[in-house]
Image 1 (tube, rainbow, N blue to C red):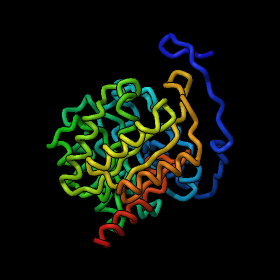
Image 2: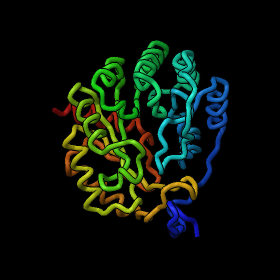
Image 3: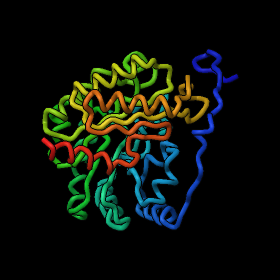
Image 4: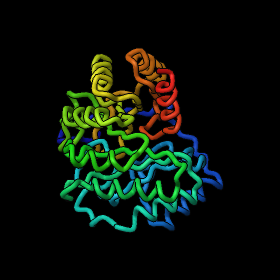
Length: 298
């Protein structure tokens, strides 16, 4: 039986609804080639995303900027942690060219957390958005950013670059945040989301379940997200990357995910994706369309 912090933990067997059918097509191979040739990183690979084959076969990918080494070591995340290299100044242009070659209509960009940089990487984020927009004027751009220490001047740099959606994931409920998210605070993340919305951004956040939270805690987190300006929310099953990571406490049924989605929509979210295999960038273009529809209905 494996241990976590010296304590023995049970390893749960995955239910049938979490078994992945690999679906690799010619489009998958083409996306893989473009990513490799342009020396890009994707959270699809570094984060061991279960939807990688499906998304790459649909010619979509979530690009990860600012390297592939994170300065934090969150206990749910498969991305490597340590001392990262300096940012690559050619990365924004390389990514923009890749978006063009892949023929994307909607691009999602995320990053490792760069606590080692004075601006947390905010200027690099802004340069990336501007490069994508210059090369691909018709593409919609979604960002999934770290907390940037909730500094308004850094968040403003990102907002001013003009992305269509800015996301920041709350990841888990308040009680579990100190156990799961290294150097992150629940209220810090909420303040980031609140500030983004106050500046007019379309705001998105994501929540993992199966870490030991209760239904009441999930609902309270959803209420907190909505009250702090989040319009788009995702809920997905936490899957433990390795035995060294935080253990899975429960596998949530598809029926419970449907219930979470209904609760979120009743709270007033414009869009909610909720399911065992949902990740924050999964079918992301659908969410933007839903928000715009709500805005047009006003």
